[in-house]
Image 1 (cartoon, rainbow, N blue to C red):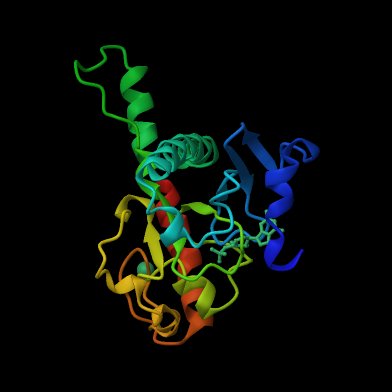
Image 2 (image 1 turned 90 degrees about the horizontal axis):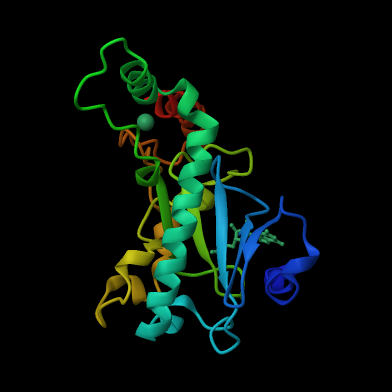
Length: 219
Ligand code: 5GP
Ligand code: ZN
C-alpha cells in the first residue's frame, strides 16, 4: 500500500487477474490504473531493479533503457487504441463513413481511413510522481472519470507537469526539471479540447468535460 503500492505488480504480476494486470514479461508489467483519470488509463511498469526506484528523469538518462521503454510504451499505446476503437468506434462518424464505403455497391477506389485512435492517447510521466516505482501513464485524452476529483488531478495531465515520453531525454536546462513543477498544478483549469478557461471552477469544468466526452467519442 501507500507510495510503494505499485511494487507488488512488479514482483508478482502472475498473482493478479487480467482485469488488473493486462500483460507482463521479464522486463515490464502493464496494469490498469486503480484510480483512472480518463475513460482508459493504463500504467507501464519497468521491472529493472536498478531503475524502478529512480525518479523518471534520472532513469531515462540511460538512453538504452529509455529506448526499451519507448518501444514498450508504443506497444501499449497500440493496445490502448484498439481498446478505444472497441469501446467507441460504433458511435464514431469517421468509422461509420468507412464502413459505409466498404459495404457500398460500388466501393470508392480510396476507402476513407478509420479514425486514428492512437492520436487520442497520451503517454508520459509526472514531473513529481506520487508513487515510488517507476511508471509511465498511457491515458486516453478525454479525462472523463469519476475518479478525477480535483484540480490537481486534472492539471497533472493537462500542464507541463505531464512530461510526454517522447520528450525524453530532457535537455539539461529543461524548465520541467526545476523543483517548482508543483506550481503547474495550481494553473487555471483549461479544457483539453476547446481551450476554454474555467479558472478554478472545477465543478463547471467537470460538467463541460461530460459534454466534450460525448462529442469526442462520436467524432
Ligand atoms: P503518479 O502521480 O505517481 O504519476 O501516478 C501514480 C498512479 O498510480 C496514479 O494514477 C494512481 O491512480 C495509481 N495508483 C495508486 N495506487 C495504485 C494501486 O495500488 N494500484 C494501481 N493499479 N494503481 C494505483
Ligand atoms: Zn471544451
